[in-house]
Image 1 (tube, one colour):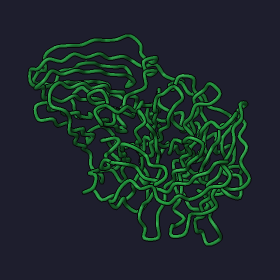
Image 2 (tube, rainbow, N blue to C red):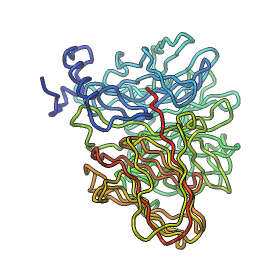
Image 3 (cartoon, rainbow, N blue to C red):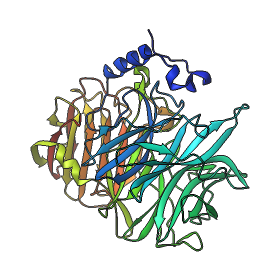
Length: 496
């Protein structure tokens, strides 16, 4: 038996129960024997993982779904795969998932959100349907999950179609409650093929009134906006969104599509308008983060998690029958009118023994650590004026590595994955440049087999990247200009 490598439309939309058990077992074995499987990130059992969905807290547990196509590393007919956690770190697979099994989601359960309503978790999502002419029809649907974890779909759509003046590219509802009403914020495209965000209002979760476009920018925001998320940090609104086709002069980015955010001072609900809005900013300065979902958690934090992958990109794990993972969970904070992203404190539960280091940067590359497995957290602090290069996933002669070059005098950093291992997505560049504060530099880095997430200066900037190294790339090297540094490395436990 061989894995499917030529994916026709018929195969992508083949119903789940039409796949043989033998093929699924063969696929599962291929994935389990794959290189680059992760230790503490959420990853698919088989097939493709993409957008995180329904991130919420319900019945004393954290709930998270992700879009899944379990039969191959391609965008086929999607479902939602369900996970729960008590600590945002260790996740348990649940039996109940959201499947494409109704007339309104027959060609895919697309992205959405979830909030607590009465004694149930209310799920809002997009149902994808293709008619006989293979034209898309998008329905905004609802479902209820009870305390036993059973999911019951609401029979009729919440919203049957996009309003006049908008195309069927209408998806990814975020459901929020504000005062005595419920609101849906949803990505859309108008008939002029411009990306927009629409807002709907309901008092009973059954009858929805379109309030029109959410007003937050006079700039053109590409041809489609996906995955809008409106959260409130210290009562200030923050809008996360993915503006496909955004003009790079508006917000510079190198990836195929950006994952952006804006900050605002207030949200005028009556006018459906964000007040005093910042320019769009990249949520992650790296290579591979998209479709980030955030929500206001009941413990007062604003939590987020992203798809550690990008649309329309082939990844090296595809040949083993799986693709992508999710980022670690982050807490979003506003400090000095800037968005800060930090790993949730619960990540410390994975730490084993601490291995400290310190010294003076040397002009020649010095091995800082050698690990038996690329599964660790690394903290490094550099004094003002430090200029140097940190090499992760390095082999002994440094012919393979990912380089993080820092210059605290001029406030610059570059991350280069050209030599990191198996190449992919090189048409979008192998280097990312980041502006950092001049002065002291702090790095908190999470490495997990084929991922690296770099938090710069306590979360002022984040740079994330997938990498696909060889088995001998387990060294960490450091070099620089005779300035002082201190460091700590913790091996991290697996969540499985």
